[in-house]
Picture 1 (cartoon, one colour):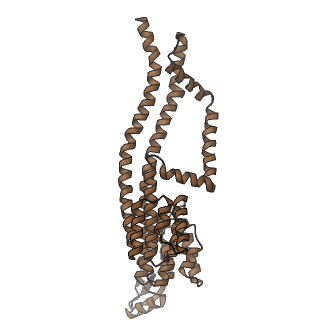
Picture 2 (cartoon, one colour):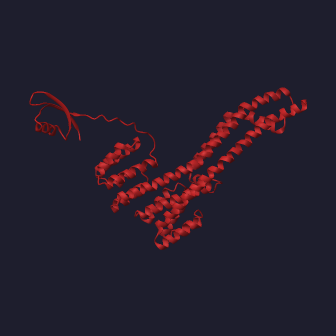
Picture 3 (cartoon, rainbow, N blue to C red):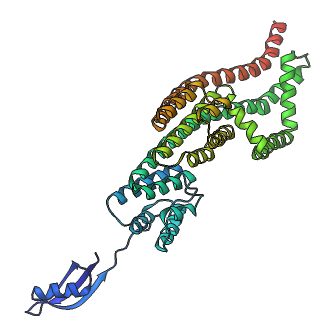
Length: 401
């Protein structure tokens, strides 16, 4: 409600200044007359809201979690949908999301359903999100289903953070180790080379190798940089092709150390997504199609799409998953039991809970294992360089002695 500042005179002619909250100036004037005052001026106080500096960047899962939670809360409180969208647009912290919500609000105001308005922005709202909203609007349980979406997205975001932490930590330590090794080879080894050239003595084989590698790195650093960049660019382009992506995703599931973690993450995401969709009333074929598109791994995606085709042919869900060779026997057996007993979505959620716990344990074990391995690697490399440099000096001192 706006606030009005007024100047009025009392029966004695004295000027009185104050403020009053009211819907319009007429209400303020009536309020003053009831108090025996004669209003002279009534002006609305314009509140100066501090403009928030909105963040830029891509819409992330955490942004969708907040939107889902707030949508569910305000819809459950009985606020009209247009007002809910307007409030969300005012308080989001990311410029991209604010623009998207503004367009969604205008579409809903123009007669579109919330599902139709959200579907126009696939860069912000995934097919999973849109399908869940569609199920919520059809069932009249939009607030409940939005809560389920928020819980699902929180779990997905949590598991993604764990995988990133498992991958980023050894990657950073590896980069540091490579940087230290390169510094020693480019800056330190040449100093020893000059010393050895002054002696004119025959160098041990390890020392000669180290100096040769150092000379090559110093003389051909541009070629090395181009070679590394070309390999990275080639792999990136190859990964965009169907064959390349299949090969890379297949390797992710069987690679040493990280392969079991990637497989457990894929199974947990598959089970969680399919279970949430089925519990929300999405039919099994649409649920499998959405699950395949959100799998994040081509091998898993193809297995799920084959399952969809098999169901259309009258087969069960478990058989094509077993034939794919990707899903462990425990998963396919539990899905088979859930399908036969009519409790598939609770069984899928149990599978997802189990594998999410497995990911937690695997990430914790990997972090504790990777650190000593990388330290040992760095110690061996640096130790080899140091020994190969000091070995000639030791031999010369022995010879002099």
